[in-house]
Length: 476
Image (spheres, rainbow, N blue to C red):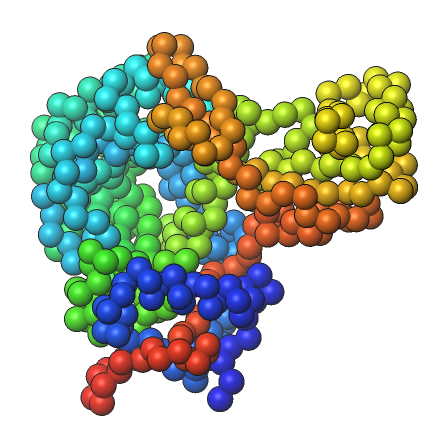
């Protein structure tokens, strides 16, 4: 049987690149994974399409169809969707022992975000103001392992930013006491997110949080074998005053691989290896909430949402700080420059023409030594480029703690005296373009991909994959 058709944005070469990258990441461990066969993938894709069509009609399917949800999003999620979220990792150590955790969580790091350390709270506060952050999540590790550090950060953020900024905290709940919950509230925490899967879904943790914090969200991975219990618990959580439920897809990493493999999950190749049964569980729970648990908002934060939209938000926040006047930000958050190339006299005449148009001041720039002229799409529409060659180039902007000297960079000077750096990493240069559609050649950097990740397997590429053994059960 033929495998499922690939979406337009996922070519066969992309699938092959994903699979080969996954193989390289896991090495010999790749052989321990159970990969679905084409017939199984086709059936799973058809089933998912039905669920998403229902959600699109009866609920919500937002963010280029990567964020299904029933009811409204939690306040922190709304800031994330709007591109204003910053996650501050308070430390790298955790007291939990969750089989699904993607990282060791055993380091005593200083607070950090976007791989940039912020040992001083004032520097972080200046950073979020400079980049237009509107919501901060305090995370870890487990931030309540260092309560004084966490409370101090919360107080500093809330006192400086005030009500314009939404502040929330992620915790496994194992250390949450009434006294600490009250301190978090008094420090300015607006929302608490509980990973109840880490504490065996202890209802008392929810009750403690609900008693003191303004907004309470349960945020857990969609664990397939826990689905029957979750169906029962959702109504109880709602009745206890839970405000929101967030579900995530299980993702495989070298750290948690052996635990996920031992549970017999079916894995999917992609930008990162994910678990098929976890997404199916999340979508079923969304339908269950809509049908049986009215009043409880539930949302599935999918891996492609995180991969695309959270990266997009980071690019936009840094890109707007270094964007040249003739550069334009694409839907995908890259900075695009259009360039006209041609003989010197033609370029001089074009520059003279543009100089005469006051409305285009700043929308173009000449580079005589390169025989080219950079300009925006608006400026291009105002001139006749006949006889010239049009090219499109794209840049990704990345925040750095120090200069690598591998890419052009711009300083980001904070009002505390600290300097961070924004690198301009070129992802495509001089792609041939047409005046009628100058962005066509750069589609990968122009538009965000739509939809959840396709259900693929190594067998679709003729690669060995499935290690399913006789008698091994899949998902019912």
